[in-house]
Length: 139
Image (cartoon, rainbow, N blue to C red; front, top):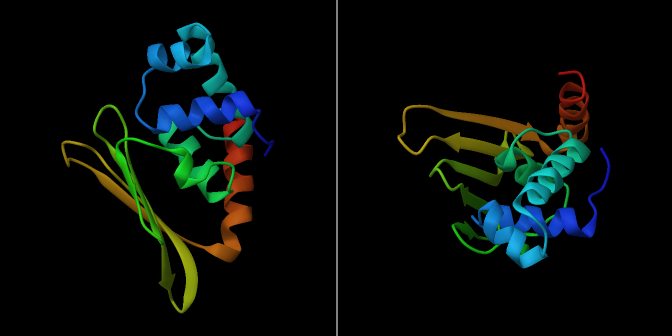
């Protein structure tokens, strides 16, 4: 997993805040196509696919701070909630699972037709992120 450039980090924070490529392009003084390329490069650097997954990994690894993100989300001491422009939700929450600290990741479609959840022990997080990175670069 590589780190992000400052521009990649800013664009990702703006996308996480619910801004579309056109709005990010105006803020960053680039074209919407450049925004798409910048966000794609950020996902590649983190070994992820899509904005919600890239945001989640960036938050987990400390590349993004919840305070960097404004807009359709809420943050408390142990929970981060994000809603993408389509209304789909991602929740990351620090929990205790089997007497161990863990990160609970939950996703839910806006129409509530599907949802998923996973609990990752914090001690396993580096291994999980490495696996995601390897997977993203083999597909």
